[in-house]
Length: 417
Image 1 (cartoon, rainbow, N blue to C red):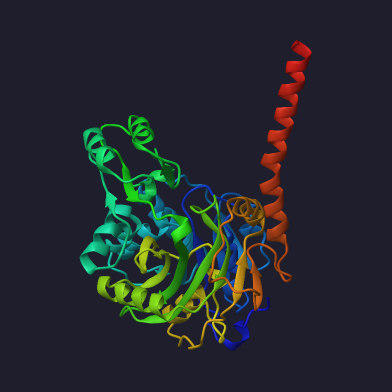
Image 2: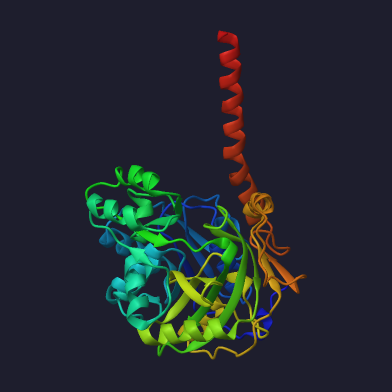
């Protein structure tokens, strides 16, 4: 779908830099940000794992900095690496983190980075607390924001007590967002069906389990909603969007694969009030689940940075959250405009398996429009097709290699027999 970026007068003298920590080359959010600002004439730069990631080959990328990281590096090393990149760019640059590690690093080391880069003046400890499942739950309780019931066990004995009284199924997640890069107790969101399964898993979590055990909200009685927004220095919403998630991968618990823009003033007000209370500024990506059993929206996840699916949302004046941040940090006015309701977003490489899984389960989203007003694809764009083909090559190759290895192993086994 054609962008309305021509309505926006961006400061083309101020570049943008996609900042990522960790090895995840197939990230469509970074590609979307490069295109979004690049179409406005903003010089775009990106940190990439190698020279052949989808982001690295975008026509809108002015320059890539190959810097493979794991997420286990020390903060001093990461800050120095960012400053080296800043010196190579040679002028003040807007930072656009694509993961929690990068967002936390920027906030906690703002004093070291502020002479070289532009970023929202968020309170330095807040992003880490919001990215933590425990920190977010405590903030929700403190400010009266509904969230699923949760336990943060400190020992195996505490889990045993919980297993005896809990209503199953329950959900297990890593307590801290950063643990997925180090030694995760669980991989992603894990549904646990009963006490025996929980205790079996817990034996492998060590003496101090790094998990959250959370109330399960049955998908048959729930709806998945998302809020993306950009808040200025006074926690004022300068761009606010709401939508509904139709499919995710892995099913019901992973990355958005298919979503629609749906107006939801009640949810927008709830999110804006919470942001005002905690004093956050910058881009947010929130996951909410509407529980039809009690009629409340419950906050599941708070990502203090742009979400991979942010290009789902655009206003009638051409504003998305990335453009809003660049405009605001360069002293430009963010044009007001209603969100483009009915617009949809599709992530090509994961929506096909998600579609098959959702059809088998029979799950549907009641608020999804019958017909989209427009479609934004995560990878394919008529004016920038190289990222799409690069994604295909990198996405398909591991699958082909797996099939080849499987065929060779079976052939070898047949010869032995």
